[in-house]
Length: 111
Image (cartoon, rainbow, N blue to C red; front, top):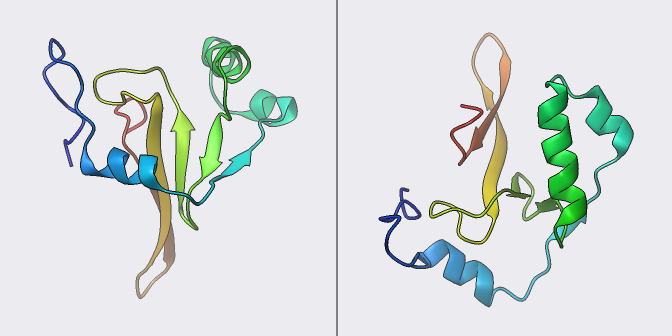
């Protein structure tokens, strides 16, 4: 959508998606991060430490289920993610041969 990729020198302008989220009265379901899950992640210790610090040193939940297949995940605030949350979605596609599980994240680090 590219709606968050503003000029970094300008004040970030809320796109229609953020404005809709701010006006929403329904509550997202917060999901807790268990230390055992974090320990089992297949990432280096530095990344695990960054995740733990983000979860413990900032307010609000690390992950919120927004709908059946969309999550809002806490991240460092930036011009692309001015509220400090990014969108993560997962879905299933069926082909003749198999079922594929796919995901999409608005961050670029894990693409």
